[in-house]
Length: 136
Image 1 (tube, rainbow, N blue to C red):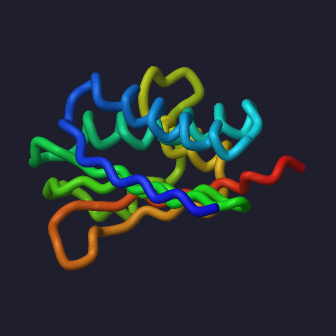
Image 2 (image 1 turned 60 degrees about the vertical axis):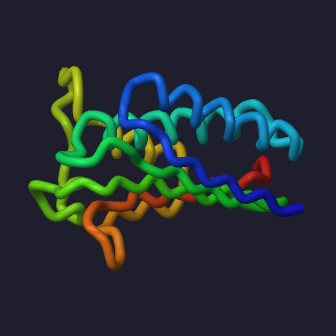
């Protein structure tokens, strides 16, 4: 089975829970374990929070998810102008006691294939991550 989800969401704090619940319902319908679903929800929440907090322009952002029996591929896309090259966002990490700045570290820890880059053919950036749906 294959599921494709595409959402255009307002750039506000209420949109992240909606994105997480929508994706989680589809994952649950595919029979994905609670632990894997929790990892994906955490990663998606962090990616959405980054867009909501850091995108410099744009009132909306997009979440694209592609699910099949083996993998969940998620892209969180903003249309804002970035003050820095997205490929430099993940250099180092936040200090241990920092209140903010660990979102990308968390996404990397709970998923596979984290990539960050500019949005092709349009302003903005893309956070891409993948998570295996097969419990190890």
